[in-house]
Length: 432
Image 1 (cartoon, rainbow, N blue to C red):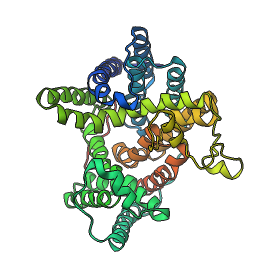
Image 2 (cartoon, rainbow, N blue to C red):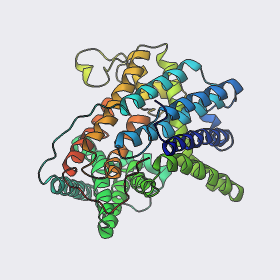
Image 3 (cartoon, helix red, strand yellow):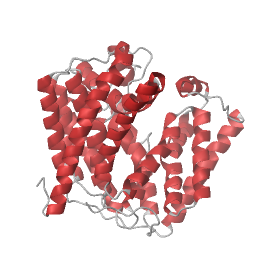
């Protein structure tokens, strides 16, 4: 059922539907006024279609009716996050850029399957280990310290003169590859955020400061923007749960943020363009733009069928040494870029429509797996640890890559360890 029993819950559902439709409208206007003009040269299009606007509203309506509310279960929040940060921007771009219908409805079907699996009743109960909290926090601190020590030995003190627009040059200069590169990604995306969230939960503010300093150092050494912005996700999750209605606070907060950029634009257009570039465009509309690009390219070219990952030993990858991200970037005239994207695109890249639907089910199962640890520690702590790699799975990386390189598997192991300890000084889990 879309509406649970009870007047209060039904009211929450109506409020959530209204909030998601409002976000669709705000993002559509933001795309037309803030995103498109400075980015037309990159291939972003503008051609609003009234019929597609209605279709986009219908897709968002159905998704918001099916998305589980409440936040006692981490999978419910992840489904809400997918709706707000993936399906709504895709629907807005579809309507405002008059994109083809087939990709939009395939993306919608994949999303709805993901939500259906995430809200299902199956569960896996995994026994908590003894002394798991000490192992999780101690291991995370040790890994963070080791990565920083290795970086210092190899490169000396980091340069403090780094611009967000110069990070690609910094990445090319950084000698950060192989196993150390993987561990650095895990540390900045999962392990140090675990320390940050755990310190927030117990109000150990000196530890919070040390964790933030470590993230900043990793950014200065590697130029990986995830190190700089990952703490914002942790604080964002913490703040959403303080409101006791995270399912409403997330879309309404994005509406308010988008509206604030219009206020900034009235004062200073340069600052508004910078804010738009690093938030609305890169976080929300670049994945949507690339989703349609992936569908357009792989509709007429050979599918990858997982040969770009672990099945590459069993079958031949059809594109030689060129990565799929480079292929799509070249197709979109984004020369020199590596246009990686999340499961909504890569499922189609591997196996066409069947792959898109299957990847939606797999993503939903990975979200549902987080519920196995709920009840032992606050749901917000589990979400804060997992939000980085799970967001990557939604908008940045193929599922096998998200599991390994981006650290979903690492996050699940450390959540399992930390789930042996209960108690919380942080926000309470919301029930509706």
